[in-house]
Image 1 (tube, one colour):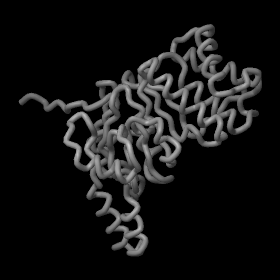
Image 2 (spheres, rainbow, N blue to C red):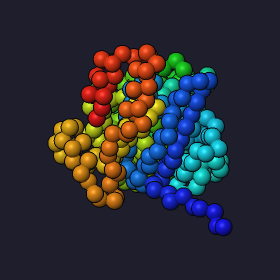
Image 3 (cartoon, rainbow, N blue to C red):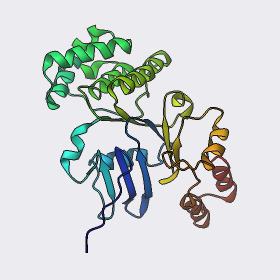
Length: 282
């Protein structure tokens, strides 16, 4: 009998991802995909499972036997599948070297020469309002906002197909945040780079994204195409009646509701809290 081949739905395709630490289930049957060429937001509150999902996609956390993740058409179990990805972690542990040297080393890692790396970094740094003189400072001595910019820059080196960012605007001031989102839209449009960006702040990113994936309590809540006009509630209502096979279907995940009910049963939250969570579901 021929082995069944899973239909791959996007440049990143996560199928039935589970993650348990001790007796606590961090992720439960998480299933979503990121369309090629999109700017997809990964939305959820702190502790919802965003970072765990991202690190499993990147191979930083081990996959379970039944987990299936595909990156650019290849199983994420193969190291080669990660060569098309750049990663901007929420927090970076920087070595005791200058920002310039750190970024040149990032370029070297991806096989890009010093001249091309610096030319690209200078262009992006200027668009973020970053003072180029700071490149000659020890990166671990920079302010938290400037460290974040250096972290973002290393994730944009070269010509990646996919850039995964975990809370990239944390510690950035409002002006730089605006410049950041403009840069993301520019790179996405000019270089056809797919972005998968985690955040807990939907208001900040809704004018930039093309698609959205929402996770709550380790369970997928809903996912969809964001190219609709109107408010959030209107978007949700319109998503629910969408029959377009090229658009994510949007629906409240029954597993999420079941998980909330289980928390009530175990007296971990009361009924009032449970009803408030359900009421606030997108």
